[in-house]
Image (cartoon, rainbow, N blue to C red; front, side, top):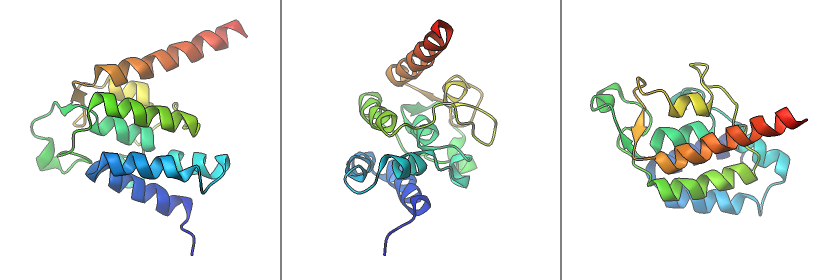
Length: 149
């Protein structure tokens, strides 16, 4: 029996939180099994535990060191997880290949760009400047392209 894109996305959220290397390997292997339409559905699917954010939101919630020392008591997604900045970039690039919606809003009406800049959020991370800069550069590049048209 084939899993639905929702089931696959849920599995990815689990892997990202618990074993980011297995997450990347699983994410990488998806292109061997699914077409671009299904891949997009998988990475854009949102879940309650990620504040209805997609796989990019989840990556942002877990990359670097959690700034809010009290986040564990609030049981936030990934409170005990740290994904290194460099590895997060590999994951981000694969998500871009799968055409993830970088403008998708989470429950709090935040895009990933707003999410990385929300230093008052319980999920705010530091030591992730490389990922933040790459995300910001994608937004800037897209804005520049839209101004040229």
